[in-house]
Length: 300
Image (cartoon, rainbow, N blue to C red; front, top):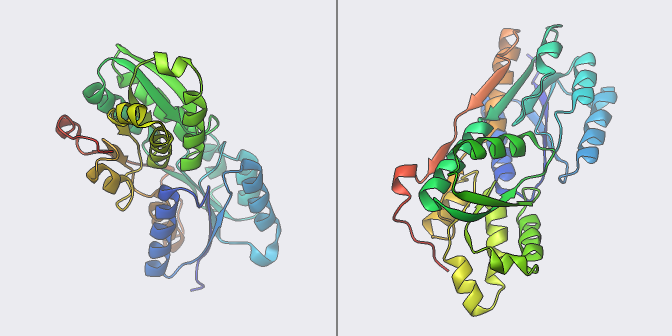
């Protein structure tokens, strides 16, 4: 049988979770004997669209399937073009409503695989309730057009303590973006008056970027800011989980790399000549568990 050829389109190289995605999908491809090409969009939705359209329209490099984690929206027009060209479409960490429509033709596999992003948000709200039951919290989101951002925020709002008030900042999943956002916010006089009691970020890279903005302060201010809890999400073994162990973060949320799971699902569908399950959700978990959060101390 001809080796399956799959393009895996990820968002950026500047993110530990995306790096973990690349490792997981490469290991899965090696184990299953699948040929993959990994491309990165550099956090640019237009660039990602152009990359994939070029691949779809070129018969010489047309793959059997595309697995994509979209930078922004679910890319409905690109998905339709891929399926019309006989290319399978697996969307990662997004759950667009066009999946059902594209599956009706049944010609190629069409499906989504995602961490349960709403549950990620709910866990963040529960971590917040343990660490900062009241007062002001700085909350750093991912990009506004990301499904993961929206679902994480909605989930967090459903479980956060009513006595917590949020100051929202935006990042793009990278350490640099959160560092810049936090530094700009710190330059405002109002930032000193809010008495922030916790800094909750939608991924670990942004949590560390925000932390570095406070490390840059004078010694007195630095000590005060770094004494409050910082939390993130993604929980990659060598980064997020390690930062928690070292006390740099108070907590994270482990989200398994969905790209490897998506490739497994695609391979099984290709072998069976069948349509895979339309939607697969991977459950996240708090690290450490919520009931163990109380006693951990952060370090400078």
